[in-house]
Image 1 (cartoon, rainbow, N blue to C red):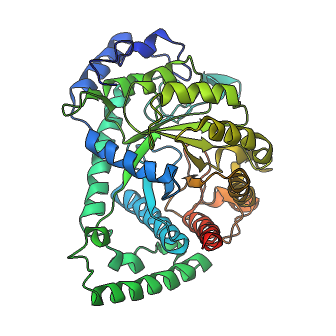
Image 2 (tube, rainbow, N blue to C red):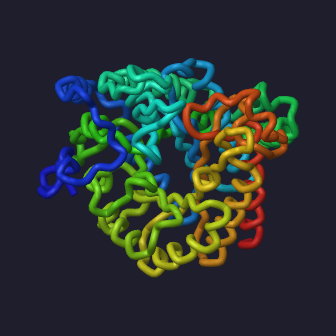
Length: 457
């Protein structure tokens, strides 16, 4: 629907709905100043880029492509460096090339970068040593330090997030289009942190085989000079559209189509805590034309999901809506099949993706929030098995990960134990897969895709 025809929606119509997970700003005038300033700034992404991503996701909904979506659980001001951006970019490239070469399928690369600053919380307040303060909601809202001044929601942080996101996007575009993503450089993408690991060895073997394939292609006159696909890549951005004042301020009418786009990212998703059909987040995102994601947790039921699909994708447009299952390894076999059946029966042009991270969070015996790699892997395997049983294409995977060799998730070939968590536990919110664990998971998914492809031959 164009902006002119969509008379029942406007960028601020969400304000008439119940808005969950929003901070209470103590200074309404300061909030208005920040919103006004953001509304005057240039877009972070462009409508044409979002449409290009939608076309790629449409292929995924038809079983012709696979989505790899990954990045930090929560970006921060403190860890904003060129090296960290580069290492995350490299890890996404590594995982994508493993999936492409091993699985024999095009991979759509979507990063949780340049906007993933807001985090939903279970409680509005946090208590330590008898002192209660507002919960940390991500650097876009307040500071992680446990003191009253830091925890005060500050709207000026939204402008800081915009500036950091603009700089991050500038570097991502340079990496993607400036030669760093050239497949001839695939052997150089191996991160120092996994160089001497089992995954590093597997990746070196893969890069050698890719090099041999490129030599054959060059003999057929298919080179980086003749084919942009070899020397460049598309890297799209995404984040949870949680802080609605920020998202509204960065919503624009596309001059070429008359459609509204949220220009804070190419793809936005609705979290499991804010997917109420009559809620503010659904109201806001139904009106923008970006490709959308919708998290589906164990409390999702077919009736509500059908209603949400009708609201968010009324024209049944392929590539518009991706459903992201985040059930937990002990719940996916029970809770996912009814949703798959209902969507399939409806005939919705929907893609399914697995988020094996958020349903598998637990507290370690030594007091760290962590995730067990075995449970993450179990949920991924069951996601593929359940989809196969229902005749649905398992279209992607969504990971919280980092290019650093952190010790936040236990297990995997790197064999992180509970006693190791304190060695390098750096997350601002949820535990992330380290580079070795993420690459290990990518190899396992690639093997599954390869096996499925061979079954169809």
